[in-house]
Length: 213
Image (cartoon, rainbow, N blue to C red; front, side):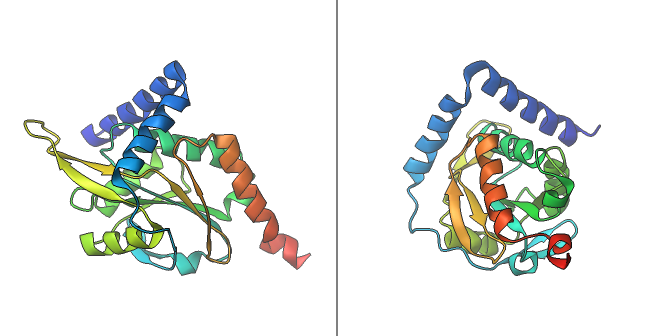
């Protein structure tokens, strides 16, 4: 196991342990405080975009027919990102194989300086195969964040080996199979709630096998 893989695993385990010991409400409140402090500049509008993954460019419009959940964060996020991604992964694990084929989670890094596509692929794989890490140039990431109302800011950590953190809003943006932004979920939304939202949207658009029968 590489040093980065070990650090990711430790971060995930620490986040889950903290949730189990203290419950998810304190985490939700902490995330809400960060989001409130950043104060979204405009309501989310959604829309198409193209960012890079380890497998190549990912264009949102190419995912039509799927339910897409978009989350903005970064791989060295100490707590909020691992918790939210763990909840998303727990919801994904409850889907049937057919349902999984029609759901994608895009983890958009707001730290393109450190998070290249290979690093994002390793990080996302620790949570679930249907979570795909994507990023771009700082300008591209800023444009996508503006479309979805996601806010973030870099905060220097003087004297720390990590160098800097990225404070960011912690919503999950839900895009329906037609490509429309239809809902946002708060940070630490319980997996059963996430699952219900995904299945409601999947029911509107039947699978190809069902449609062919």
